[in-house]
Image (cartoon, rainbow over all chains, first blue to last red; front, side, top):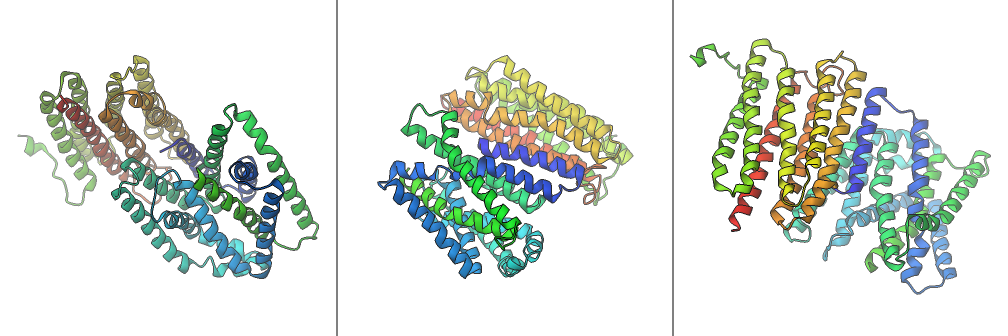
Length: 298
Length: 241
């Protein structure tokens, strides 16, 4: 167990107590708490992609921003042309990204990309499998997301859930047998998977995903980024790091607010749910590519 | 004759069955740790004595708890907590004794004892003075968990973990890590039992007598397992010479 998992554990205990006392937390409270946490930690963890990439690659700032924005625009066009394919692509992309950030510290030589992908599959399929009814009712609530219920089909996810969890545990045990990971590290990973299962089973989908995304992903990546930049710039401290994070974080929040206002006044005619999925996916694509480049160069 | 006054245990009385198994297992473990004290170096004798005391005290309580359950059909909450208030601080003493060789101070011991006592007193109030409401169960459960989380933090990241890291012994590092797993995973079985009582989160899906089954399973794993980890460190360190 590391400190991120410990913090996660404390929040799981606290939320469990709150749920037991109150039976449920209103959807508004869930969404607002999630937005606050994502603004504080989720957005910042991708807000220094430029600094991370430019520090280890020979490319001009202009070219970097151009490629970053063009990638986002292309993905937006893909969403417009083929929403189902875009959604499936997003599930694969985020699976790989989550798996990579979780397991990057282990020195896997062979099959590491497969392991990353299966770890992410196990994570997302567990989230979708345990919260399938909630996800389907959310999808069916809006006309433009009704067709997503084909993707979130329980029969499909039942198989992906069983298959990916069995495969990832087998792969980790195999890597332990091949001495790529120690017994302690194997126990840590299995403990974390069990904890994720318990959390996703107990809590609603928004709370479950926010807990994982903030405490096990974003804060962990922020720490990795801080350590990397500290190795380049020895006088870096927390305050200086926050100063690096806030320009793009603020820019993203302002941009999101403008889009939400446009949606509210009917200028952008899509549902809040579809808007959230598209928004998260299009910024995940360049971020995942940059982080993969960062991990490979570490 | 002892056998004539003993209540027979019905084959489906799994609560009494786990009390009986628990009693025998604790007694056997206690004898084992006492006997094996002679196989380890002097500096490890105290650790094995404490392991033997933990299982020995538990064995005596399990003997009474089994009879109490058979006689009344009620959960022996009082005996249970008397057992824990004696044995759980002793488990904390094990952490202190292990890390003493790396410079652990008495203050560490007292902090762990205080945290474990807090955890148990809050748990006892939650269980023994329950009014059957969820509010009472959750409030005291949360307060008890604060003590538990303090111990988890101390053994995983705090003073105990740092002292183990500082020690030159791989056996101590490994042993403290294993004991930390017992605290994290093994001790987390107890809340399952706690949540089976009236007003608890699991009370609608598990019968109230499940409390004792969960506690007995947790005790067997934690008390005997804890002792065996200490024993394996003591033996491997003693055999080095």
